[in-house]
Image (cartoon, rainbow, N blue to C red; front, side, top):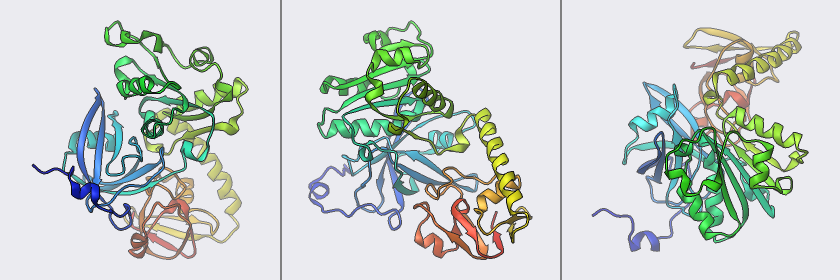
Length: 379
C-alpha cells in the first residue's frame, strides 16, 4: 500500500511550497461535488507544505491542444490542511480549461502552478460579523474562509447565503450543514432560482428559498446585514446585482469585498459590455498619446504591429488596437497574459504573476509592462 499517512509525513519538518522552485503539483484525488462540479486535490511533487490565506487563488499552467493556457482558480480548501490544496471547478459550455480539467485530469497527473496569491480574504478585514454571498462556483473562496473558521474551532458569526439554479446545484451543501451543526453562530442558507419537488432538499426546507437574491430574502437570513462585513463571489451579473442591492439599502460599501478576475469566463454579453467600456477608455487614451512618442510592438506570429506609448501598458495598447490577447486580472497577478519577449525592453511591475526564472528566460506580462524600446513579442 502506498500511503502518505505515515510517521515520516507527520514527523517531517517540511519546507514551505515555493512555486518559483517547486512549481509542479500532482493530482491526488478528484471528488464529484455535484452533477457538473468537481474538486481537484493536489500535492506538491517535491515534499513541502502550502501556506496561504483563505480566499486566495492559484494559477494553473496547462497545455491544451498545443497551446499554453494560464487560468486562475480560487482555492476551495482550508490553509489549516497544508499538505493538500484543492480547487473546485464547474463544467461550463465552451469553457476550454474547465472542461479540459473535467475530461482529462486524472489522479497522478502533474500540473504546473503559480501562487497562491490574492487579497480577497476575510483575514485582512477582521469583523464581529460576516456575510458571505456566493453564486454558483463563486462559492469556492468563501468556502475556504468558512472552512478555516470551522477547522480552527472558532465559532465566528457568519451568514453564508449561496445562490444556485436548483437544490441539486448547491455545492458543498452537506458540509455547510455540518458546519452549522457544529457552530452555533454559523448560518448557511440557500436561494434557488427553481425548486423542484424532489425529496432531498426538503430535509431542511426552511433554509431554501425559491427565486433570486432580493433585499427581502436577504433580510430573512441576515436581518442585520447592514452591520456585517460582506464578501461576494460569483458571476459578474450576480455581483453587480449584489452591489446594487446593498447600495440601494444604504450599506456602507467600505465593508464590501468581491472577487473577480476571470474575464474570459464571463457571460458573452458581459464581456461585450466590459470590452465596449474598455475600448472607449482606450480610444480616449490613444487620442491622448497621438502626439506623444510611441514604440512599435510587433507580434511575430500574427505579423501585426501596433504602437504603444511610453506610459501605456502593452496589453492596453493591444486592446486599443482591436487585438484580443489572453488576460484575466490585468494587475500582474495571475500570469494569464504571460508572453515571450523576443526583443526589446520593458518596465514591468508585476504582482507575483511571473517567476524570476521565467523573466530570466525572456518572459513578461503585457498587462503590467510599459515599453522602454521597440518590442517584438512571440504572439
